[in-house]
Length: 247
Image 1: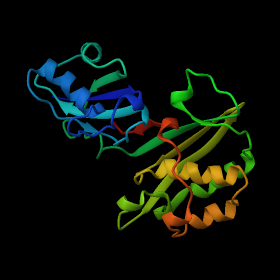
Image 2 (image 1 turned 90 degrees about the vertical axis):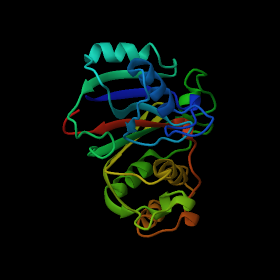
Image 3 (image 1 turned 30 degrees about the horizontal axis):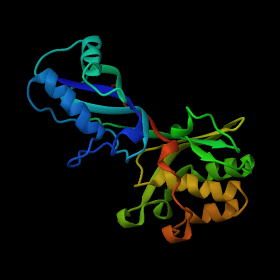
Image 4 (image 1 turned 135 degrees about the vertical axis):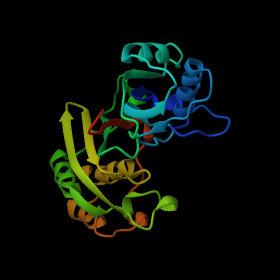
């Protein structure tokens, strides 16, 4: 039977999502827990491959088990065998053709930025702490509106991993400011490597007045990675949600 689970995890506890030799990844932690339940190896498919240090509120993984599990029992059994830094939030049986990656309609990321000279220690590992408070929120909002639609995001991709086709479609891009906290929510059908973090790095250039919104807009029209800003830290990035028809 095929199942899907929604996972939340602390990114800095893992070397990313995908299996890698001799390091702990989220995929390895989940597959190890499933192997205890199944009594044999279980391979999982994730909706997205988060890098080391990137957190998740709503990663989704699918896998097959030989016996039937209720959502409650599967959630409890997995959480009893997973590290404290990762947790199954919900579980469900899904159609046999469900694939956490291929069946996804969209993926959404959230990026958290803390502005100012001081920051609460308990949230520091989960945000990008900018020690200045010099952001122009209206300029950042304007840039977010430019992201909507289909664009060439070649300037927003890790240079060594840029694909031949770097066009991607953004369905939602929103900046929310609450006191010292900025939250950027970006939803798209697919993303390039480091795309959200590079977007945030460029928004920072505009927000603090070093670059104009028009410069940011030009990057979406076939700009080069070498023309855009640095990649924002992984600490502030969360894989937030995944959209499906049947999960």
